[in-house]
Length: 60
Image (cartoon, rainbow, N blue to C red; front, side, top):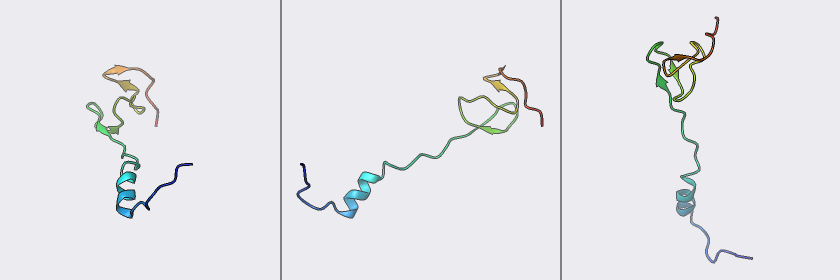
């Protein structure tokens, strides 16, 4: 069984774990409605994607 020869320092351990965090979600402003939405996703309020009507508009 492989066993480390030396103790991993907190600094080195932290540098390795620096890549483990989750990135924050990105949002873009919709050109037509001005609402924030995820990129490459359908706008659920209007039902449009890339300028085309894909779904029925959501009723409030």
